[in-house]
Image 1: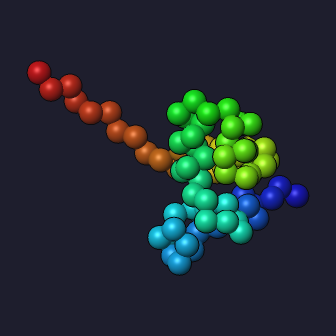
Image 2: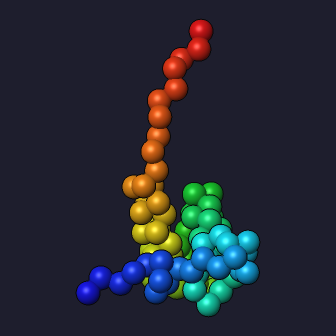
Length: 80
């Protein structure tokens, strides 16, 4: 059975980080992990800096990917 990333690994609670998605059992926002990777940190650097596991990093990426699947993007007209 496929695990539910939101329920099993990531939680959203208005009392923790103002309702931002965080790794369950921590106060570490998913955005920090994604931003660190986007900024050039390696998995090993993220693991050491934030005391997370490789699986938590992969789950964060999977969650972010799911969010992108639900996002609607509209092309903007080019302004001359």
